[in-house]
Amino acid sequence: MLPEDVFYMARCLQLARLGLGLTAPNPMVGAVVVHNNRIIGEGWHRACGGPHAEVHAIATVREQYLLKESTLYCTMEPCNHHGKTPPCTELILASGIPRVVIGQTDPNTEVAGGGAQHLINRGVEVISGVLEDECLSLNKRFNTFHTQKRPYIILKWAQTRDGFVDAERDPASGVKPAWITNESCRRLVHKWRTEEQAILAGSRTILLDNPQLNVRAWSGRNPVRITIDRTTRITGENPEKPAGSATTGFKFLDRSVPTLVFTTAEKPLGPYLQFIRIDPDQPVWPQVLDKLYQRDIQSVLVEGGPTLLKSLIDKGLWDEARVFIGAGWFGHGVKAPELPSSPTHTKKVGNSNLLLFRNRLSRSDSHLMAPPSEIHPDDKPEAPGS
Image (cartoon, rainbow, N blue to C red; front, side, top):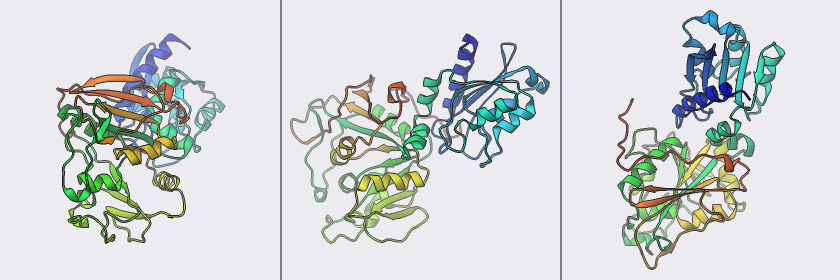
């Protein structure tokens, strides 16, 4: 591995990260064109359905004749199939680029080595595996989705120093949750929401807190909202539902954001509120994750209660967990779930310590993953369009 190949691939990674939260279900990809140790073109994939990173990079080269003497670097293997855009391999060949350096092979079975091999067969020198670990980490969501046939699952919760997530509350009481973290932590969580395709909370969390589960403290796209409501406690059919919990009262069901409700009842589909039936006689999580996979949802941020979180932890169905340890002390209440591992990173955010955990058994190359994106407590959201 040549030092200059590492240097330029590192630049590709920087460019690729600009697509965080914008490219799914496509991967984040960065590309640069180098001629005589000088970058003459750069690009990154900006949105699904738009031009790929290689297309942007080649298009920015002013003196196109230099392409025949240049090297193209890209974090992921160029595609070799017709999707929403033409194959990048054909553009590379038409440009006459003689050398291509790749970070990781595309795990998508439609590519899976075919792009690199097609270039080799046409006489292009192809170098693979440069900063491969970093490239795998960059696209942990995309890689997990294609190798495990399920979304990448991120657990998130906040707990006190003595290990409680909430006081004991009844849904009918109307008692609001006690804040464990502060506004700085809240902004960071909303930033995380813009980076994932979906957010999931349990029906009890919706009954207790009536959350919106959208993005308000940051600038970016709202994730698809998901809940599991097996006994129709929040969808207006359970006669034992808490007083005052009519369907129209739940912000989760307000149709302002695409929303999926997994339930055992037969219900009609709508454009922004879809009810997806699950078999009550079968395990729930395999059904939910399979249906999310069928909908091309590659990542889910789980902001549920301890029962829901524990069910995922016990089944090993998680890839990382982000846990805020606040400064408060409850003494008693609802205990936080426990993880079968030690944190890999810690960070001070606002009034809390943020702990990052990785599931070593999830087969998603979790030991290679970088910490999640962070903000300084005094950072402000970016203006829309900036």
